[in-house]
Amino acid sequence: MKLRPVLVLFAAAVASAAIAAGCGSDDSSGSKVAELAPAGVPIFAEAALQPSGELKSNTDAAAQKIAGVDDLGALIVEELESSASKDGEPVDFEGEVEPWLGEHGAAYWDSGDTDASNLIVETDDADLTQEFIDHQVEQSQEPYESKSYEGVDYVFGGEDESAVGVVGDFLLATRGEGRFKQAVDASESGESLAAEDTFAKAIGAASEGNLLDVYLDVGKLLEESDDQIDPQARQILRNAGIDPSEATAVASIVPGSDQVTVEFSSDLAGQEAPTGDASELLGELPGNAFAAFAVSGFGNQVKQAIDALDEEGIPDTVPPGQLKKGLKQLGIDLEKLSGSLQDAGVFAVGGNEKSLGGALVLTTSGSQAVATVDNIVKLLRSVNVSGVSVLGGNYSGFSVRSDDLGDKPLVVAAKEGRIAIGYGTAPTLSGLASGSGKAKTLSENAAYDDAVAALGDTPIGGFADGPAALRLADALIPKSDGDFKKAKPYLKSIRFLALGSATQDELATAKLIIGLK
Image (spheres, helix red, strand yellow):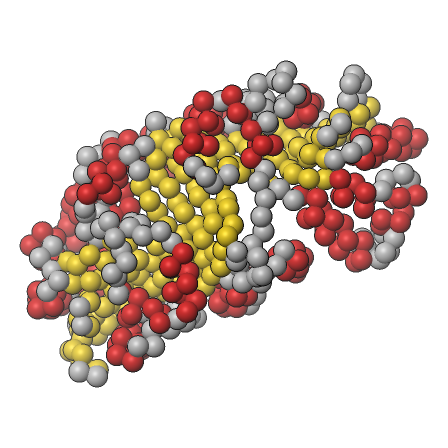
């Protein structure tokens, strides 16, 4: 094992222990790790490394529920030492690392090469840290050369050409000498990632005391990927006041005794973040759904999409500027329809491939939606489209069957206040019936109620029932799938997934909560 892999595994072990076993101080506000990361770094992840208080007890409880392990950090260290020993370059974590290990550690990926990670680990004793580096160099089967830059001594070499040294109160390990020198320059000049306003603002929006914070410069990552974002998606974002070329985001992990929370915040670089609350619709979706999601303001998004499609036309089918006009002549007014749409919800039901189904449910104002569906039915009747049947009973709508769709039809149905478009007649109609007081809804599901409570003041926008989703996965995934077999014991610990979002001025926030049994 080379020196660089030793440090990578060491950092991974500490970060993993922090996430799953409760390592991490209650207050990360004093961290200065980002002062070694060069300005302009697009990805930066920082973890708290020392255990303390309620944070440790909560994550120990979560690790026990997920993996049945009382001290996952100790287990990871044991695996690290075993791996290093097998490679002939043993590491004694307790004797060589713990005596100097500080409170914070970080990894960053710089511009132009996001495959190469660079490590920063806070040290409480620079001399002991240097002894650790020297000892690893002595054991290394690959040669390292002693060097110095701006008064900082370091070693360089190994199969992957790593540079490792002590810079102030930190152990620094980079891929290549150039990155090491950049970090030294950043720490001495003050022109580091920590000094950037965008970074400081993004990290400042995250709550204190997190186990792990991951910062992303979304605009820079898009730029480095040759700006590979769909033009229509970009236009929709801009219409919503979002400029992805200037956006940043932070994701944080926060453990609890019976849940693990991933918090997101993003500076959308717009005048104001999108707002809305579709939790009422989500709670009214069918109670037997194993997964559901809802968004507000769906009508605006549909209108933008229709306007863009009408302007560009459909190649070889509809000329530009003729889509809305042509359909209106047939009694289908897309502008009025999109204007009547409000919120949208999607749900899925079923415990196996045969029973799998679901629908998109749209809430509407007025009677435009029902009238539009009725006009579509009349149009289909007049042209005798093959495989199309008109729904009977109390709903306006139709179903379409084809070999490509499988055993179930595609169904479009409407009633006053709602449209449902789904796979399978029963699931689609249940999307219309839910909320009427006659059918059981998600809001009557105990796990859903706990998900809402876990999110607190954040409106819920997405929900998954852990056991129900696992039953479906168990039915669909082949028994021979080794990865699923390994993951299944851990997935059994999940009671629910809850997703919520909120906004404050230019800042959009979201929470993903994993509720544990």
